[in-house]
Image 1 (cartoon, rainbow, N blue to C red):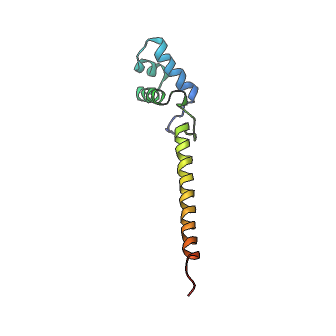
Image 2 (cartoon, rainbow, N blue to C red; image 1 turned 180 degrees about the vertical axis):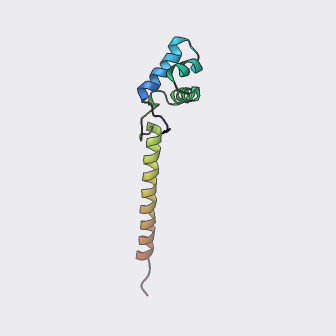
Length: 98
């Protein structure tokens, strides 16, 4: 029997959270009805509170702020490499002939 981590689509997560808000039922009760852990549903609620419409970007995707941070880190690394190359070139070209 294979017991792996279940993956739920973003629409299911949003619908589950919407059900909690509109039904007046507790988070644990809605989780039981949907057959998921209340910890899972609580985690989705935290993600939605923190990221709003950017929550649940999908498998392999990042939220826009995380994606921007990743892009900037990559750009920063490239700029550091270019700076180091220019420093070495300057040292080579500024040597006086003996």
